[in-house]
Image (tube, rainbow, N blue to C red; front, side, top):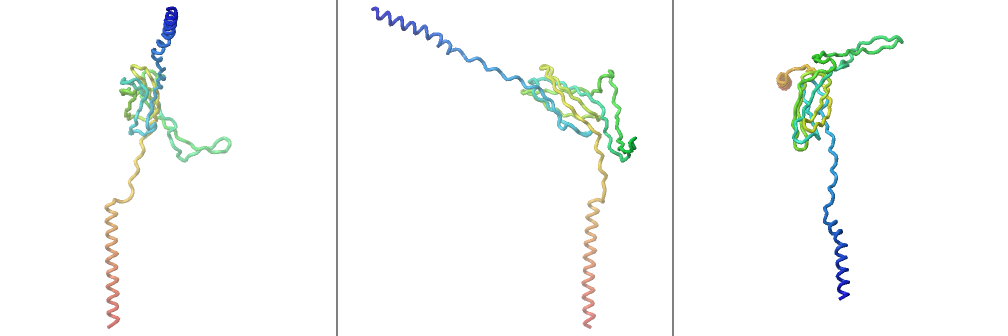
Length: 210
């Protein structure tokens, strides 16, 4: 009887000692910490265009399915001239080339400290916080684009340079159809002269035999 009591007490002690271990093993693992969100980015491709061309605005890592407001500001182009071959003489006797500087008047804003702005743009992101938008400027200048999500308040900036339109190359030379016609005519004249040469040689041989 005493031995059975001792065995019962040992079994009860083992059960009590093993209960915290089992309870601890049953607890789930703590959640893994999530990675911090990547900062938003805004790019313009191509970043330099001529007036009349279209560029693409691409935004990444904004809020999911949110509206993004894009504020467009513009400053004038300076130093856009090219060398015109003229020069001036310096005090030390050397010469330097004179470069014309082009200045384009812009619309004056209400606040003199605020650069001229175009109409704001809007875009809507997809489920991954991305958007793509076409943009065609109507004036030359250095553009600054600032995109801000309405709900996430995430913001990113990109820059764009719009140059003057490329001059059209003058059309030189004759028309293709005219060139082909002249070539065919020259070939026909050459063939006719060759036939006359053969006929003259044949006639000369006949006269020589007589």
